[in-house]
Image (cartoon, rainbow, N blue to C red; front, side, top):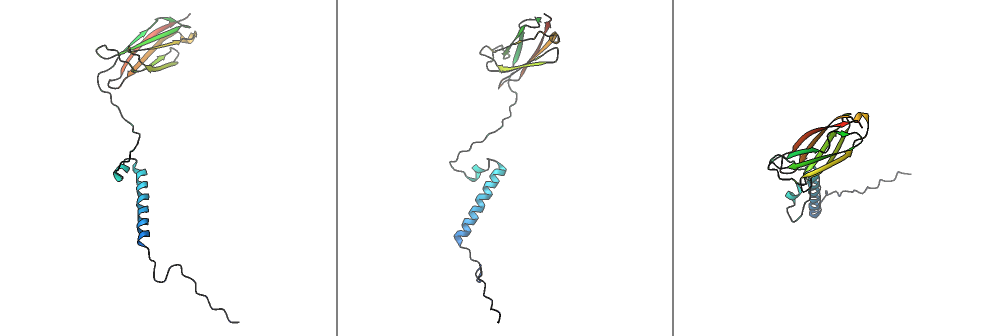
Length: 175
């Protein structure tokens, strides 16, 4: 039996060439442009989109602002309620923040750091009230290592002012 003649295979691409319709070509180019724009926007960040799409779109972005100290310095005064104070007692530190003219500064951020004679640290942070005052009270445990000199450091900040700082100390005695 003679071998069967080969059947012609169908060509997927017509013999006359490959014709692309104009609409398909325009749509393909548009898709490539959109994909490239989105990729660029992710690489460049949100500042590129308003330039490319200037319309009524609104944009929300988070920004980090760097603030510089300007204006007059804050004046910080520390008042230690009891000096000396006995171990096992409560101590109170009153911080007053004013401007150079002596006017009370409300809503100033205050940080108090108390360094025990043993090396332990107590930290308190808060805002001044309408009178420019911030109070911090804490209990000093009746332990032998708590006897000695305690150092108090205070810093105060508020927008429009330079940071103010002050230091003080007090003695803790045995009970």
